[in-house]
Image 1 (cartoon, rainbow, N blue to C red):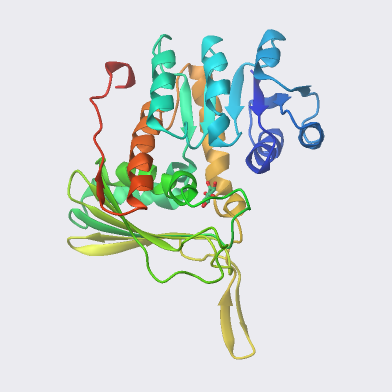
Image 2 (spheres, rainbow, N blue to C red):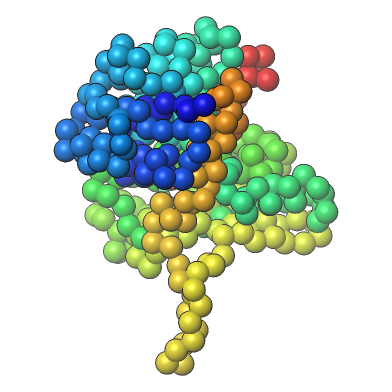
Length: 334
Ligand code: ISE
């Protein structure tokens, strides 16, 4: 049967999900678009035949216009959508971050635990990238021995004017805070940030790139080059160092050309293409899980743990090694 999805927030990601669900996901359709900006809402609705438009989630729920919610507003606006959606008992896919800080994430966990089971999946799409999945399977297999270190690069060509210094952590390194514990099977224990020479091409308000050192509870050390003014394109790549070998993911896979004394490979320019297949898989699997009455990916508990790591990461921007203390997981999220 058809799952009616309401999309909340019709910006870059929301608009992308509208066309994804309409054209590439099976067993679901976009039945409602919730967007306070009318021009944006209308542009998204044009790609979703039959979808109704609302400016508030409460109105869409009241009108019985949806069976499930996909939240794609900026992180600071997630809580006011999550709470009424939970109250209505709706299944939710919430774009990252769950919320911007641990206190608000805890409020979400409390509200969710009033229901019979977890209803929220957080949109950490890297877990659905085929190469990340293979790397995780390699770690679990033990074929190269134990995992020792992870070397990660996270490079953006540029960022929008709304992007602030702390967003290097809360909007960008947020992904590494989810995906490395998932890869390594161990939680974040501490975070440190070091500043190399500043990129003079970075917007004046940003001091970057930064080097983030993440220590996991099992001793695995992760270094992340977070770089958002690199110009050439979008690149997310990882080298994993094991006891008996090394593995690499995220290498350029585009068209190769030999011309004019040069060998070149096409590179991505945006996360919307770099992770297009991962987003497709994430939404398709979520739709199928919703129909089974479950989730199939990171939970609100994972989102809360990431919020704790982000809090430490933002503090680490000002110096020091910041510890991350994760409370015991409620049985509800077992
Ligand atoms: C953006 O919000 C994302 O989620 C991208 O994956 C990340 O690479 C980028 O730095 C963020 O701003």
